[in-house]
Image (cartoon, rainbow over all chains, first blue to last red; front, side, top):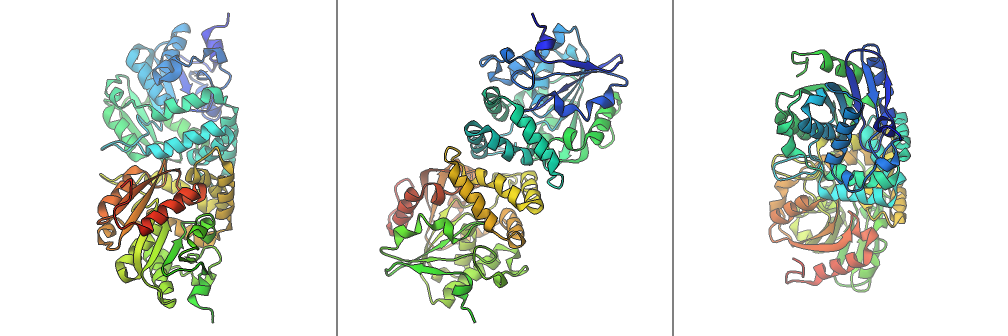
Length: 272
Length: 272
């Protein structure tokens, strides 16, 4: 019987007293951290894993009912850390995993020493007085396309998410990353990701949170980031030079450096 | 010396007492009307033309200064109609041409018997209390991509604009349409199109306007269409069954039928 760690394809590297867990975003897997995670291996234990239904996670982990809400993914994260006897980890989360992290931390604050949120958004849909960045029509079109043709969808989504069109290799690589995802799991996860609304959960997050904001992030634009910052008590905001939604891919050095500072700083970071 | 009509690649077909002018949208040319315009040739004179810098319009027509605002394109339209001695035309306009039409009608209401606006938006950018549908970050990314690689941009933009992923031929054809555009003119026109703000002009439009709204139009979502409808005095709103931003391409029969009704109805149309 495989352990939960094995079923989530957990990889642990490095040495140190504290544990840094990296949680990837929609349609990706732990490989997206390949240029950031090594920077932490000298003085931390670094834990990489794949979300249910993605990467090399055991396909049997995925449960249509459990994973019909982000809370299902949060329960997975809690179960994984518990199964390994870990607590007080530093969690570095990207995109939808920032909300999975928030939901997990609300249920089990003891598990987390801190959370670094890269490009968080509590709700992608615009609403009266709230600017998530997307009208329903746009998300409907993107999800229609995803359901009809996952590869075409990946080719549309990747350049929007990655940005940095002067360096197309990042986009090409990200298309490949997305195309490794199994549409049978990624398709319902797209709906969960894009239509979730965690706005009311933000004030309940009680662990230290640092938010990393990119320039020109079309997925988590200024007003969406500002909402997360304003509603998570005591959260710190650091603005990166990096552009796009995936600084850990396009600007790994700046991302690693900023995450390191977030983990060590007790006083507010520069740029807050 | 070529006439202005020749320089705008004007094609006139059909017979009748009234003139119907079709004005294409960003990155396109008059060919996008090929499945709609013929339905009017039996009882109207149908005029097709290409905007400056697009299709087979004389490249010399394009002037960086004049065409740095939508008003420059509106002045072109006025000059074209005047040069042909036309007035009281019915103008059927798509997307950005709906605003060009509005600006022309404000200057010269005598030229227009009516305007049919397909997928109009007075401002694409969200703003305090206004939902155009796009945050600046998204438009920045899309325009960065367009400037770096027009063909890649076309491949991203086409499926978003066309929708209907179950019928990919429309998207493939639209990519070809976009790729016929000359980036040296289309690139600055993209900025003019996406960053124009005509909201204050809407109340000044004094000619009869019918707005055609598609389902799931990511370019002109519900709140953007509602704004145009509410601010153009006496405008009528007709909701199509068609989905996406280009019903004249994907649903030409419904579009032609609805435009015909808009041209003949004096009483408010069904669905208003």
